[in-house]
Image (tube, rainbow, N blue to C red; front, side, top):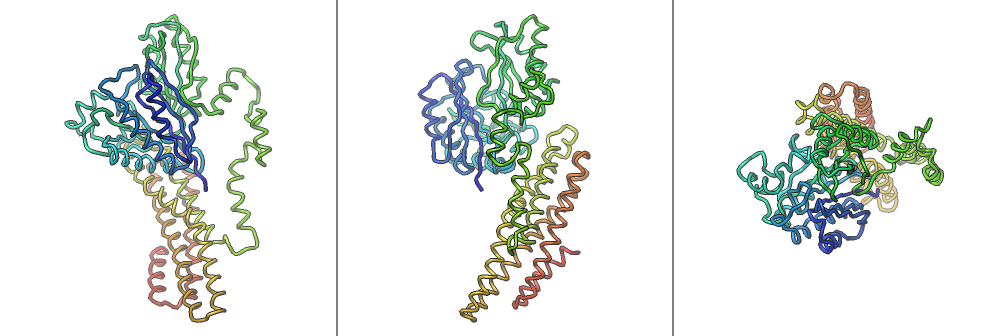
Length: 491
């Protein structure tokens, strides 16, 4: 399956085009595509947006950090925007065929490579954070390069997640993470008084009592006061609502917005939300947009039916009059769905104030469930392949009975091991689901109930496949070990 990941590295250079060109060139590798580049001289910062396959984009990000460390010296750097590294922040965002947990694994790998190759210490943030306080970038970057340089060795709270407690002498430290799509949104006011922008930012941002999923600060940019914001979940706190609050707060000081800007890219859905809000269109739906309707029709489905399109081919394959995929693959799929639901529930509780006391348990559950889900997904195909290998061995036995029997025994063992592994992993999922019930949002109990039922179905179905293969095995020692493991699951 193809994967698509977005990466939006921010580099501490917004004035020297040649340096930015060199950083972008370093990230140009096969399978990675440049979507956007923004340079800001006042902030002295550039934002590069790239997208690509999971493996390729990791290497591109690593190389970009390396090139930035060659060209940017933070000892001689100044700008309006806070910074702690030549490559300041490197977030990974899931687009297609990957999950936020996949991006967490990517962030960890990229962080390890940045330290190994360039000796730049790395902090992990947002969904990749190993410490709850580091989910917020502003907490990590407090004091900027100079503050971290002074404290990184002496203050354990400032030690990096990856690497030794010392900054790179010129490139500082880098923050790597995984997050949802973020909109960098700035509003310019008709005043040069930056104190007003700072007061508005304080009123708007969540950390000081403002809007959820909004981070904000005030700067002087191009001679105007700017309210600079990051919208970390535009579906929960839409961009039009943020603009209206900035406008209302500005009126308190006798000023008003004169323009706004998007740094990087913005999802189409965010603009659709804004259009619906400001135009007050009755019964608005995204399928009313011509281009959306065309894409839906040309793609063979209506825009609102995308989930069905993803699962329907597998369901149709199950219904086809062929032996594979069969019950074993369906059991693996059920287990994978159970793990997926459990991760969703844990992720939506982690980081919320009501569940901060369970942060470590939730993070541990997500870390355990993520690889199990991947293994169960892989078992969907592995089960079908193992059955096909058994059929191939039986055909070979008709040609050469002696070697064919050996092939049959080997193939049957594999066809037994795959569903046994599914049963054990699904049982592990069921245990974790039970653990999550008392420490997650009770309004999501139905999701955990579904996950539990799917996990039990996966165990039952997988064990049935194990039993049917055991009946044909001749290796009694192998069969006895398998029965011992299945009995533990049943008990």
